[in-house]
Length: 117
Image 1: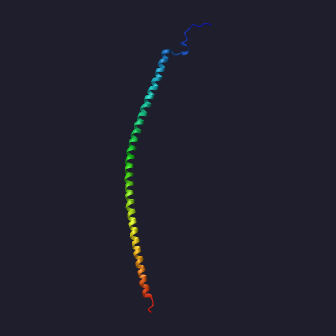
Image 2: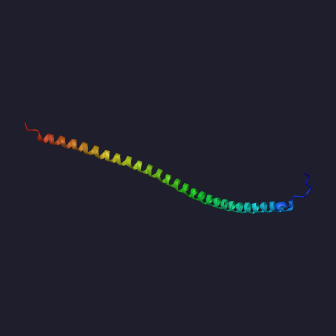
Image 3: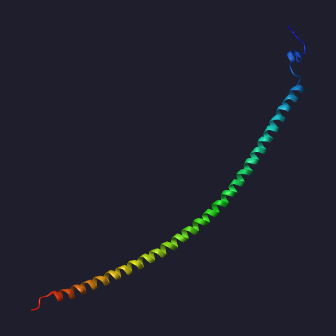
């Protein structure tokens, strides 16, 4: 059986021009969606860059405060270590003086307590 009929219009089959138009409309929709996603991504990137700038500024301020605090701690450690050494020396000197004075008084007391012979 030999059929020489054109079957393009059977069962509502689209013509090649209709297929090309449909493909173009699909591509246009994809392009519009891609542009929308690109705009959203650019906005996200701009927000992230702004957040990064704020974080870097805060980090720099915090590092400066930390350096100042460490310097102050170092100064206080030197000051108080010197002061504590000096106070220990003063107390040691007072203790030695009181010990000598106590020994002298004990010696005087022992002289007075000895029986008269």
